Structure formats: structure tokens, C-alpha cells
Image (cartoon, rainbow, N blue to C red):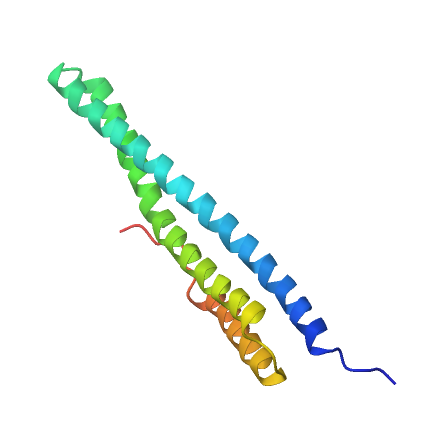
Amino acid sequence: MSSQPSIDEKKHELKDHIQRSLEDSYKKYSRNNRMDIVLTLIGITFSTTVTILAFWEDATLAGILGAISASVLTIQEVFSFNEKANYYRRLNMQTKELRDKLTYKVSSEDELQDIVDSFIGLRNDRIISNPRRKKPD
């Protein structure tokens, strides 16, 4: 005959799941945010360099750097790094709210079940609402 885990054991296990979700969403936020920043800086640098080269009348190099700049900006848009970073930042904050509610507000099985249901909803949201790669125009 197996006994049911206590509410404290359930809370501890749920807190572990929530912590792993927090770590994953923060890692994905950080990676997408860094990629967005790097690609933005590269795009700005190449675009500025193209303008400078145009004043110096170096059309060949300006054309090459212009093509690279357009490619970088297209990659940034197609892979939605900014949108993904914002999505994972929002998801991370919502998961932190669940963690804090679990830590400070849950004292009954019903309250625990509410947190479980909310956590399941967030996991489903990761599948449904996660920004995907866009098709180029």
C-alpha cells in the first residue's frame, strides 16, 4: 500500500520543476537577446560603413558591405530574435510569479492544485505561443 505524498513533498517537487523551467526560459531569453543585440550592432556598423564608403566613392566595397548588411538585417527579422527574447522574458517573469506564490501563499491542496494548473498552462503556452521563424517576404 503506497501512501500519498504530503503537501510539503508535492510543493518541493513542483518547486523543482518550476526552477528548471526558470533556468531554461532565462537561458533562452539571454541567448536570443544577445543575438538580437549583436546582429543590430553589426547591421548598424555595416550600414554606417556603406554610407561612408559611398562618400569616398568606393562603390564596389560599399555594394559588398551593403549586401552583407541587408543579409544581417534579414537574418535578424526572419529568426525573430527580439520577439523571442521578449517572449522568454515574459515567460520567465510569469514563472517567477508562480514560484513565489508556491513559496509564500500555498497552504492547502486546492491552492497547490491552482499553481499546478497555472504551471501546466505556462508549459502549454510555450508550445502554442512560442515565436517561430518567419518566412521572408
